[in-house]
Image (cartoon, rainbow, N blue to C red; front, side):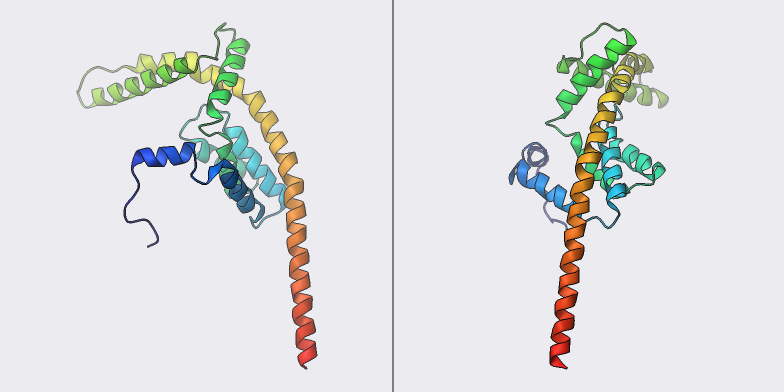
Length: 210
């Protein structure tokens, strides 16, 4: 009912995701406002947010939201807050996260390769998607399967990314928890105080009328 009748072109939507018209500062302020107003305890909200931040450091691209929700559910934290947490992985931070995770992961696994070449990551993803598409078409009798491209992707990208992203993701998640929890505590305390003052004002007004 309230959706736009004419959707903007895909290029406009991509540009909005990378560079919001109202600026990143306004977008971040709005997200912070929504997080503070979530109806839950500060611990559960902050922990849910941390779950989303942690998942942003994993190579489960396209599934960060579902992974964050599942992790939040397991830890009994706020699932909705976990969705906001996944915004830690965005077009501005992804090159840094990917390079750091791959570099650290290849060092841990002894691959001896650098994760700083972002173009290499894009090529690997492209090869994996091509291999997946060709393999699925082969099930219908079109062409031959190319599963080996996925195996190379897993060896060169997925496992190093997963191993290398764990520690930075955990550190970032812990930092997100301890930064946001006191902010949410203070905000909720101010809201309770404001509601109490409004109730007292209404009670005083009703007493004066009687």
